[in-house]
Image 1: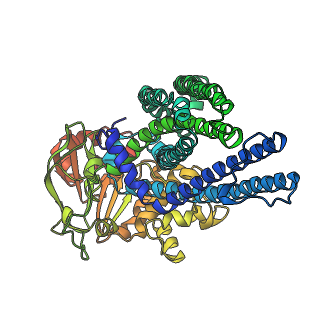
Image 2: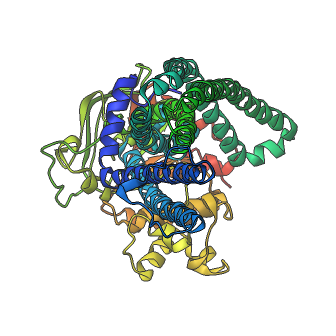
Image 3: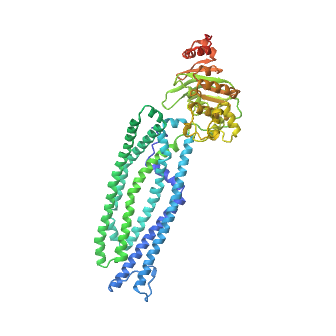
Length: 618
């Protein structure tokens, strides 16, 4: 797969762009951070009250024990019994837990709203960009890769805001709060218990550098799997027709196994990294029990609001530090996914309205090619020095061997691509100087392989003109000789044709595609071998029915059948991207050139000989 933009995004560039994207959701993100910080405060408060309860019970059981340090200057009334005091402290613990639960719920709701909005917005942005990109982008990128970028890569990019930005900020704030509180309890004990933290950060950085290439490779393998699945579903008739099911299963299993092995390699690294971090965190508790116990026995800190609270904070600290593995893992996933998403967003829109594009006035349909050269990404020209003019209402047929440039020539008329050199004009207007929307609304297209959407027959015909009335749709179907078979469908024009129109025959699909083009009432018709999938009798009906529709319209037809070529006002013969012959059917037959040679090869009976004007019909 080729890169859509060719840009090699560094981590620094990606992070800056991701931060800019996250800034668009700053209010929601700040809300998430607020609720998470509030839960941190509730955690500290809960530990404080638990420690207070322990110190109070100790003072009740041991008269020589130090008095508890009551918060906020509050001291229970002297007439209260110990059970009442313990009940009050327990009530405060419960109240803190309830407030924390409310904060957690609110944070979860805000989090879900922000993340769902981000995914929907980014996915729409990528999809909208895909609609603006030229055919060259699709020529250079496989469908599986494009689908993954809109789906899984957008989700991976979301992780940056979700995990990297939000959770990292929450992690930093949480760790600062815990460290400050622990320092206030006992600075030296804090230093001793957190001595392993630099080692944890070093391991996190090393882990990230190790797995980054693996995540890139994993994305490529996922693209290959989706591509294989898509091709197999679309080509199921070929697979079954050649009895290749087992071989296709084996190929899919192989692609699937590569993803499994790749991700298993990543999981092994995570499985090794996470326990090491956890073990270092547990070492902190060992230090706390040894050094902290010594301090309690010598009266330097309390048991409840000192050692117990410190232990709780240290455990929470360890849990937060344990998130480093998740954050580091998410950073690599999100950066890999974001790079692929930004390749789409950064891909150049090669065919777009120029800064001075003007509206295209009502046209007659005069099309002129002026010394046009064109090619694709490989650098070799497909068309060279193409010069001709099609008059309004003229039917121009294009003939040539496969790869001679017929479809490429047609693709320049609606400006699917821009020529390397030369110009294409309509009624004297350079196509690069007119609005694309105006240009394409004046052009009707029927491709060699008709594509229908999974919707009703009427909606497919009216795809380019959704405001069309039912009468207009029916009229277009009649012109394309499609009305008769449509009326025989279960729900007529409201029949859903299914994905890609597979419930219809090739000829039926092509007639609907022709009706779709005719409904646009275009001044120019482009028929890319539109009758290839239609039998000669149906072709005759369609061509006869479309003669009135072609009146006054410029029509380009890629065709090989003599019955179609003879209808053309002019035939252009292409060979290796160059015009080698041009004229009417009779003129070219008299010239005894490539056209006559190709035509004679179609002689397969008296009927073909009659079409050639060679006589012999009794």
